[in-house]
Image (tube, rainbow, N blue to C red; front, side, top):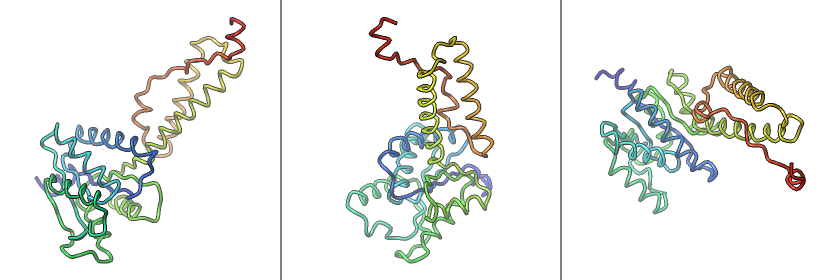
Length: 241
C-alpha cells in the first residue's frame, strides 16, 4: 500500500478534553455511527492522540468497532513519553488500557513534555490522514488549530459538535412548530394537508444545511416525516370533543 493509499484509508481524531455531561451520551452514539460509516467507505486506520476527554472516547469507540471488524487498526500518536504524568489515577488507568490494546503506538517526540510537542502531534495527525473527525465547540484551542490545519491540507472534516447541534435544533424546531399548529385553527386541517406542510418545512430545513456547505445530520436524513400527535386541550377532553 502506497503512502497516498494509506492516507486515504486513515481517519484521525481531535477534540476537547472537557466535554459537557449533556453532550456525552449523544457524542458517544454519534461517534460510533460515524466510525461505522467510514468503515463502510473503506477506512481501516484510525489515529488518536489518546489524551483525556474526546481522545479517550474515540479510542475506545475504535476498540469496540474492532471487535466486529478485525482489520481495523487503532494507532496512537503521542506527543511525548510522559503525556499522563499529571493525570489522576482514573485517567492514567484508562490511558494504560488504550495503550495496551492499540495496534501501534507512535511517539511523535520521544522526550518528556516540552512546549510545542502538542502542536507537533497535531501536525502528525493531519499529515497522515485523509479524514479528520473532530469534536470542536469553540475556537482558540488545540482542536481548532488541528481542524484549521486539516482544512488547509484538504482533509475531509467531520465536526460531531455541529452534527449534534443540528439534530437538537431540528427536534426543538419541530416541537415548537407542532405546538404552534396545535394551538391554532390549523389543527382542524385535513391530515394530508398537514403531512404536506411538514414535508415542505423539513425539506426547507435540509436545504439550509446544504446551502451552508454542511451535511444533513444522519438522524434527520433518515427520520420519517410525520406530523406530531395532537395534544388535546383539557377543556376539549372534559367537554367530550
